Length: 98
Image 1 (tube, rainbow, N blue to C red):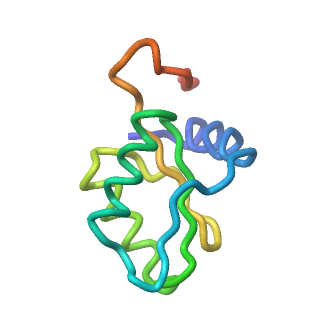
Image 2: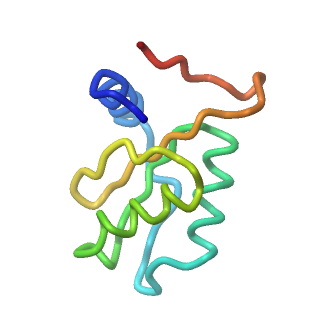
């Protein structure tokens, strides 16, 4: 569970990132969840943009985070930010403040 200081820190890091996963008119699919999972394994911090299904973005984001064991950092507008610490010490690039 992230505290507010950690959420703010991760939001700041994510502000420079471009969304790498998009949810379009097809909505949430297994492919979208797997794409977020792959990005989390590579980067630890992922931005997802909602092109469609905008009214359900909070619920869909919480579902993605729960199914992947990730943290939903924030949903801002049509963008959701996810964080999951890497199990591989070589890929771990983010050190969260306490």
